[in-house]
Image (cartoon, rainbow, N blue to C red; front, side, top):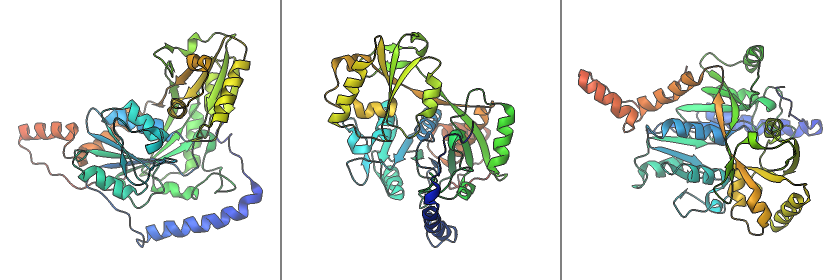
Length: 388
């Protein structure tokens, strides 16, 4: 059920109150204009949350990439959490995971026709993407995990809310997992409840809609996770989840914030699951690799390993994995599905915004062509905060 993964450390609530004061002052400075938010001439779409990790930011950014990349030149800008480099870094063919971080590296490897860059200073990163000669054809910038980075004023601000960690039931850090008070949701143009069960009942949609208590200008969507075919990490072999036999043993290897939904989703296919959980963005050590080898070897045959795309970026360069592990470790691709038959509405909201505010995307070029044929004038304006 919704909110079922939330754990509140009641004894830490006084510290949460102090943390909330600091966050509240910062937000007030932005709201009053003392701290400035900057708009850009290029369309900017921000995807983030107000909880610590695990809301599904990467697959939602990838959804937007797939939606836009055939119509516009897309750039993804991330902070590059836990990377070894500093400042602005544009991913190139020889860029390593340690230079840009696991999630940007995952997108860089998956989408060769987009720009992927990292910069803690998002304003500076957008400037570089739009002015450097090699990336100046950028049509739209997707900001990954930038909901609290208020120095940038996006044209569309998307807030992700984990179905299992609803912000209305959570508390501020450190007692809970909220980065800022739940009232921060008012800055969102679009709110998406993520990781919903496939069989979520219509009544649940209505209850959640009322509980989130959004303003009329905010759009609300629900998404669920869908899985692709398993892909061998060290090879070209693939297999379907439905091909897993009842007597096979699965070692589920995860270093993500919230693997609970993944475990639930795999249970119909994997009857015997042994979990090895690591912290989000965990950097695997030699000791970890030895434990993985030993744990896998201890499982009865037939056996295999399933890991996430994000973990795969950190495992593929590790030395010491046994030959048996390398032959049996599979990556499980995920994507998101928009529920309630609202995919078309969501897509149109995104495409319309980019259409209206990008001067060089194929979306705009096509519209210009049609307008020229009709001899109707058309002018572009700077991206503005949209209200629905």
